[in-house]
Amino acid sequence: MPNSSSSDKASNDRALRFYQDVLGLERLHYGLWDGGDELTMEGLKKAQQRYEDLLISSVPEGSERVLDVGCGTGEMCRNLRASGFQIEGLSPDRNQKRAFAQKLNAPFHHTKFEEFEPEEGRYDCIIMSESAQYIPMERLFATARKGLRPEGHLMVCDYFVTDRDAGILSKSGHDHDEFLRQAAAADFAIVERRDITAETARTLDMGKLLADRILLGVDIMTERFRTRNKLCYAVLKWMLRKKIAKAQNQLPLLDSTRFCEAKRYEFFLFKALRPAASATSEPTEEKLGAA
Ligand SMILES: C[S@@+](CC[C@H](N)C(=O)[O-])C[C@H]1O[C@@H](n2cnc3c(N)ncnc32)[C@H](O)[C@@H]1O
Image (cartoon, rainbow, N blue to C red; front, side, top):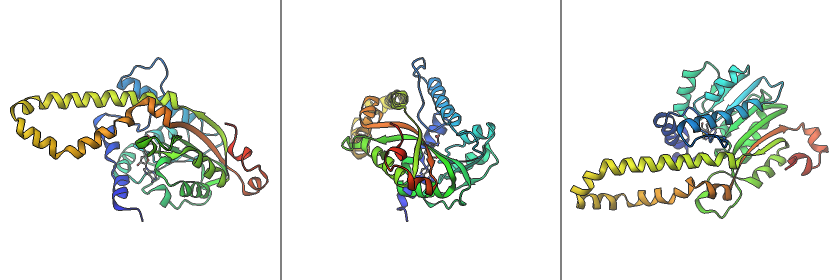
């Protein structure tokens, strides 16, 4: 059983509600920036669209039934369906369940992927756009294998930890090498991969810009209170000291240079090998594919 706090977080993710309800973002993933994009909300939306286009255009030919795991607000599902796929969404988050239902009339599985019981061989392609990091690796590959038809595809686009000693930066994302090791052990072969760390990292520069603006706004709005109620302000600051320290400790998460040093954002397209094929394949070369 998941502990109640992680379960509650997955079922009502406030950070994601902030992106959607406060920032007006329909897509909850990083953007794929190019040199010409401006560091603005419009630039971010354009970069996110480019990221989504990469995923949709990479769904292998011949795929019909597609499952979007951790489907966020259902935006990519809507566009996958417009491209002709039979789409299903999955998310443990109740706000996303509602958003999905408002956007499209399609099957939605309200559960964590690791607790999902898919019909055997139902899907041609399973997509995990920045959701793999939340799913325990062993369950991720076992459940995907069950849900995919033989030689079906698993698409994973996410960031992974490459430096395990980078403090708070090492805490989110699966370990890169261990993820590939477990993929190979579960008989998934890499058929395509692309390192997009540099193109996605700019999303953090945008995040930092937004955070600085929000802090400036709070500073301006509280200026009068702070100067007129010095004692009260000092007490309040003391009471909130743990929250303030926590927020300060999280600032490195918005540092794009440190992100590039400690993490790798990578696109993977895996193929579920048939058991007979996997038995004859070379365990490392064949299953891990070319770097
Ligand atoms: C960063 S958002 C990405 C959303 C969407 N895929 C996108 O690219 O915009 C992470 C998504 O993973 C979902 N998620 C979190 N834990 C999950 C789990 N255990 N199983 C499946 N999805 C999960 C969240 O609810 C959310 O939809």
